[in-house]
Length: 436
Image (tube, rainbow, N blue to C red):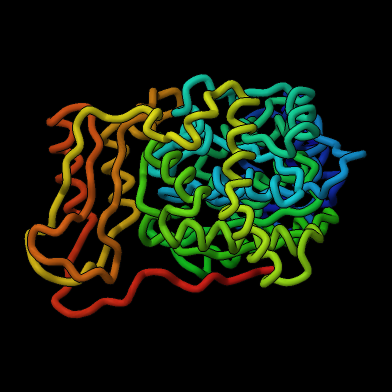
């Protein structure tokens, strides 16, 4: 047992502040196994109750970054950018944004995770492309970025090993829901990635980790303070997750929708969020002077087909078949497709993101526990959005399933996610809010 940890636990329990050196020593001791799980868990619980100051949170983040390797991008002829989403349902913006920003002149390494529970993971989506490799060595990643300007990869175990160790402990000690701990976990990985410009998509609503705008705003401020404190140009965008982003929920279905959006089609809300995030990246990185200029450039790159061609280069570089970008019908497809229809007339009052995600999870599109297999072909395509007026028999959603029995179970859950009102209902979309 480390007697040195006890005063730090005591001080935090009483609402006191730790120095950066003390926080670094605590984390180093835990990773070096001189501080046992039960003492670190005790300190984490004290943080949950008492919080952390801005200085403590930044010190915690820096100590986590220093626990592993970092990516350096010296000598690049383009600005380095990064983006993070706090997780949602149907969120495939990275697949659209990464090639778009690379074509605009940025270097963009997007490190993503796997889905767990109702939130989807970008890595699972990309692996719906046959042969696509998400695990790249750091040297291979650097070489690819120098060659084509972008990569879509998994988190390297060489970067921020402290985050994995701490999260495993937080997960089993009910210490996950602490804003300073969440913020340091997110930003340590962003800082280790080496980008000079970071934009964060902080979601709120039934399908998000933060269910209210107020909670999302608190987290956004903490994230931006860390980024700015570390010398990175940082901005956060608050976006609503009351209903899914886009229409597709499920891995191959979402990849297909992302490719359609890159080609100038796809749902309007998916393109709108991609454009919002891209505009902030363009301005902060110096690739555009105004929002109007940024939007014009990004839209032109989409409409010219240049962003699609960049995506083909990315898919090919990481072992996938580049033809799938222009021919998404080559992606895995489920054998059973069923349309779920409205049984009454009215306006859609709710298309609950969490309920729709649960239906996709039942089909096998996600995992309930780490290590569960994921079926790339199954999922849900939403056909009715909040505010739509429906007649009896109008489509609510499509179920893409492996069997009729699986489709039955998903349909039952979907019907609980939708509700109709007898009078007109405004659309669910909320204006974006910017922090930083």
